[in-house]
Image (tube, rainbow, N blue to C red; front, side, top):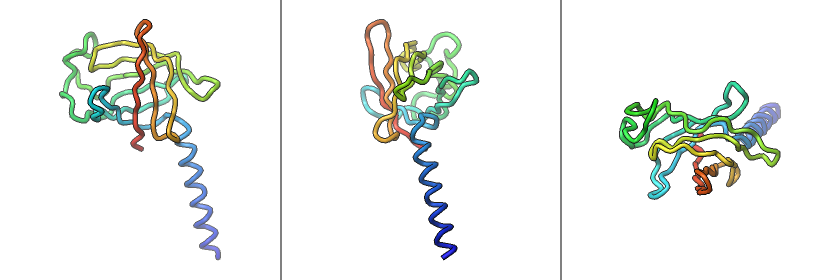
Length: 143
């Protein structure tokens, strides 16, 4: 009986940690090409020192090794380590926004209007805008 209770307690703790994990975008995400749907990178969303959320590429899944399309500080540098989102702040509705982004494959900076979990925390929708043109990308959780 004691073993059964211990097993049940550990299982419920594991479920609680898993559920809590999926309530936050912090973690690793597979990014997908807008046109082909092919996996491009693994990006990690993390809490920055100023309390906002940020993301950086941690793994390259088949793109060229270096960012030849990039300009400035990332020109000719490896994709791994490029910061793609920063300064995302929590909103009252559970989403994040008001930050900035960079899409290395297009060498484009954008306003990160919103980032929200969907599909029970298994996916993440990121809406970015350049002027009045907005696009939404969907990332898939990998951890």
